[in-house]
Each structure stands twice: as structure tokens, then as C-alpha cells.
Image (tube, rainbow, N blue to C red; front, side, top):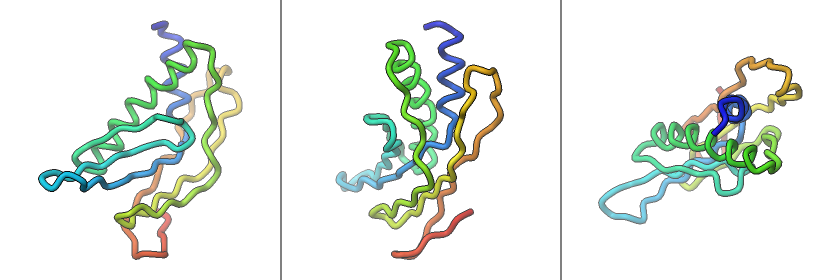
Amino acid sequence: MNEQLLEKAKVLASQPYTIQIIQDDSDEDEILYVALNPELDGCLAQGLSVEEAESNLDEFRIEYIAHLLEHNLPVPKPASIQVFMTSNQTAITIPPTPIDNIDSGDSKPFASSAISKTQKGTHQQN
């Protein structure tokens, strides 16, 4: 894969995509966590902890976006502010941060997700 394409994918992947974490306890012996970006259909990863699932998703999101770029497919933009309540009552809030000039070489850091445990029906924003 072309280095320029990979660098562009890394910048695009660093945008504040919504991160949804789902606890999968279907296996009695092991709990897995699935992390996904709803804006990027099929972009998901799993891990033995929330942190591992999110880290794996961060890595896969780069590959996912690089694939879209390589095949001249559109890269969906992050959604605006969203809060999801998952089955294990984890609130995930992502602030919007658009990238307008991706080709200008400006690669300023983007806002990251805030994940916090909450009581059912409420959310906290860090």
C-alpha cells in the first residue's frame, strides 16, 4: 500500500468517530468486549477488556479507511454528538470535530472519546 494513502488513512481515522462498546457474555467462560464505529459499517474489533477492544478498533479503523481510499470509495464522516447506553450501562459521548482540509497537510490532534460507567438512564461527560 502507498505510504501517502496510509498516512491519509491515519489522519482520517483519528477523527472523533462514535465508539460503541458492547459486552458479549454469551460464552460462560470468557467475557469479550466488542467495539465498533457505527458510522463505518463493518468496522469493529473485540478484546478481553474495554481498553483492548478500543485499542484494536483504533488499529483496524486505519486499515478500514485505507481500504476505502485505495478503492476510491467515500469515507463517512463522524456523526455529531451521540450518547449510547449499552447493555452493561456504559455511556459513550463523542464531541464533534470536523476535518475540512484533510489534503492541506494540517494534522492537528482530534478530540478523543470519553467513556464512563453510569447509572441506568443517566450519562456523564468527561
